Length: 66
View 1: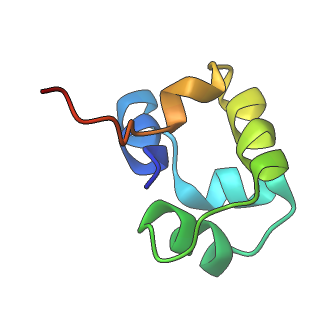
View 2: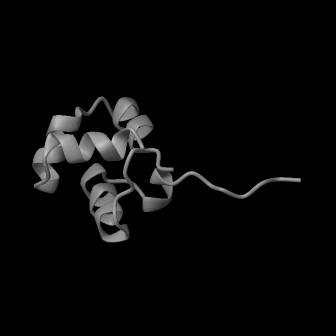
């Protein structure tokens, strides 16, 4: 799972803008945002670079705190 949707909302950025910057279709970016499809690692780094954030901010931890 990724946090792309949360970061876009926080920054007030539209998916269409991100799609244009990535050179991807709106449908592809929307599938990333809705977690229907996970971007490859290199795409995740590119998204982080475009959004000017650390890639860690786009990832949800799967670690369970006991």
